[in-house]
Length: 284
Image 1: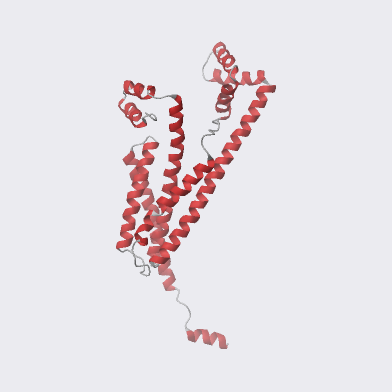
Image 2: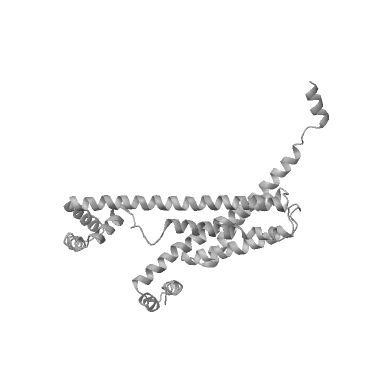
């Protein structure tokens, strides 16, 4: 088995079957579980990038359709928004992940320096941490002395217990995660535009028509599937997660549609001055 069967593990937990859970956890090595964790980090980038892409892009499409833009202009506005937001999302993902990794590395370097020059202080801090968790003084001293023989392990635990920082996983690349976010944003964000792209009538004005209805169906199905998969990887009921994401996305697009509709009505009420008025103003 390439990775731990998380679905079986969740089912075992839900029904309270320790034997099945034991079989699942004992069927793979530590290296295989690590590989599965790395894949899970990238899967999250796919899911969350896709969710942001499809919701924001369809909100733009809904507003453009409500304002009676032509199909051609809807595609132009939708694609420009899609590309711009995808780049922004990817850059933000990369910069935030890189900044977090740099912060953790800096704190780890500082802790390593303190361990080298102030070993007694660091061991005392670690003993106090374990004593605060309920370990007797003698037991905490034995644990700390044992860990001190394995400095990297001691440092990892110190980072978590004292600073609340997990060691940087070098196998997870911020750049790769950002690229996956970008591609997922573009792929799923482009799904609602397929209806307009394949319509063949690019000069037709948008509105509550068949093409917009097809775009809604594409949006709803894709959004529910992404929400369901998000539920699977976050250990929630898939159908509940799918419905919640669908409802949230629908609320966003309904607001966008009515805002576009209201702005279109406002624009029609503001009429340009007539030619006679312009001529009179020029004469004056």
